Length: 89
Image 1 (cartoon, helix red, strand yellow):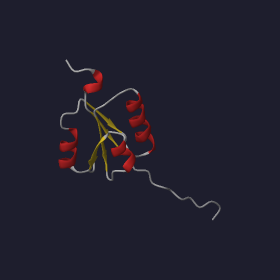
Image 2: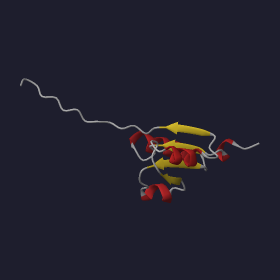
Image 3: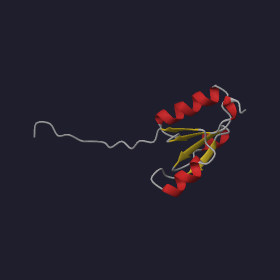
């Protein structure tokens, strides 16, 4: 039976604010098999031992490949839009 640290975990949006913190928490806890799906791969990700996966959650083929052999998925990808409001005009 696989130990907890041997299970592969996928994190989408792992390069964003929340995702980076989640990745760090897993690394600090000794998790070895982390795959992070992101549109671009920063250098800190490859230096940390994380398995990067360049792709988009809006592409079904990318999602199918990224989730292969994963025991858990943390979906942290979120697109925020800046809304500008004019007051008093």
